[in-house]
Amino acid sequence: MREASLGPDRTDARAIVNGLSVDVEEYFQVGAFENTIAKGDWESIASRVEHNTGAVLDLFARCGVKATFFTLGWVAERYPALIRRIIAEGHEIASHGWDHTRVFTMTPDAFRADIDRARKALEDAGGVAIRGYRAPSFSIDRRTPWAHPILAEQGYAYSSSVAPIAHDHYGWREAPRFAFHPVAGSDLIELPVTTVELGQRRFGAGGGGFFRILPYALSKWALRRVNATDGQPAIFYFHPWEVDPDQPRVAGAPLKSNIRHYTQLGAMAGKLEQLTRDFNWCRIDEIALPLAAGRL
Ligand SMILES: [Zn+2]
Image (cartoon, rainbow, N blue to C red):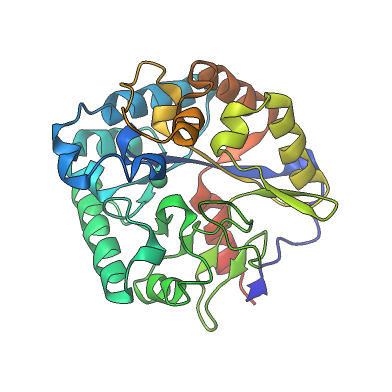
């Protein structure tokens, strides 16, 4: 694996433009509830994804930022008008797989079929080519050495599917922290979700519970450190359900899952607005495509 160079002139933290992304899925499709809600029951549960993603689009319009929406094929098939609105407002549509099946639970053939089905649904709904992919729950890791080669074979320009940390649900601790070419002889770029290092320890700092549950000042410090000390853009993500304090409560989930899912939902929109004021943001393809093109 080779680290992709951003060049020596990108050291001014204020000049760095960070990658903003939204993983578009229903509140009941998250990993935290996968043992509580069967996929066969999804159709019978009240949908919130169109409403919540609309709220995210409104917020982005207010704040003047563009982002990448990594969207499930399952969502695109049911809400094509949402896909068209995302594109019409200047954002990027990319793939989050078909139905949030984590990559390390699939065979290579099943993975190929999953991303193909998702891409067709997204392209049918949006009428634009899909260039990027994010694995559900950052599930490309040391168990899936075939995943990046399949993305390269299928013509993807970039992936943002690796969490280079040790986490209880996911993570690939040995992976590079910043953009790299995961497949020899291919231009495919992997942009790992942002981590921050403090001494020997490494923390996930690119969104998720770190951003939503802990004080905003910690995220601001971490992202500044990535920009100023590492001289790299951050890759940040959140979910539409995180801006929805009124979502129905899922009964029967483990306490830890419930705490993670429901804490600080009401504060999220304000935190995101602050984030757009404190840093520069762009779509993920605006970071990935120049890196792929500039490959030596
Ligand atoms: Zn997801």
